[in-house]
Image 1: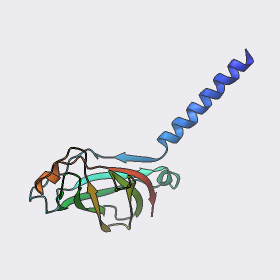
Image 2: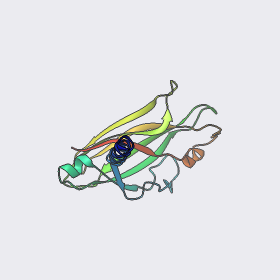
Image 3: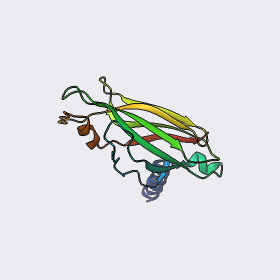
Length: 162
């Protein structure tokens, strides 16, 4: 009887620790599922998508999350059914007080099937740009406009105050 009770207590403790670790990383506030809109065509900057990032590291220091503005433009269409579209991403820190560092990846992998990570460090009010690629199985893109239909998104791996 004692063994079963101890085992149940152990399982509950493991479950509680697992849940805490699973929810302890990064919090997005704001809409990250907004699709990018390209009113001036795919080779011009999209309308901005706003996102607010925070994490336990912010909370432990008593800091608020940082609002970011993302824009994207197509720099190269896919050259074949197996080649990705290429994009330039612009991210602006909208805070006038707080810097932020983050590491993120999109769902695209390189030819060796490894994710491509992007490390970004922004001071308050600073803007940075970086390049990404995106492709998915069965995606037959023939024009630059075809590259605007991707389900591009980021998985934020680490977010910390700067």
